[in-house]
Image 1 (cartoon, one colour):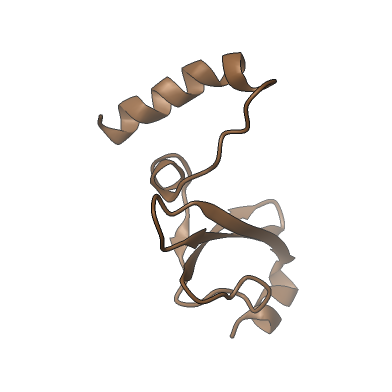
Image 2 (cartoon, rainbow, N blue to C red):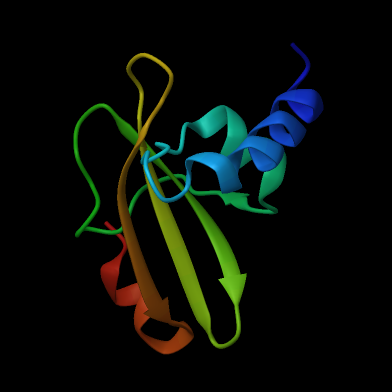
Length: 91
């Protein structure tokens, strides 16, 4: 199934499952649906062996998503930083 069709299917099915089933975020869906930048390294709070990070900008914050390199690359962490403090958290 193509990523765009998978996203449409997920969005169409989400209201039916939202109240009953947690839907984990895998990197494949995130990559297709969310405008982001690849980070060379994760902020120290999210830096774990076998993971990678992506960042988004929203309002006056940088939102960082950490994904596992294993399996379907599930989301394993999340943190938000102000622009001023973000550089302090990089390795």
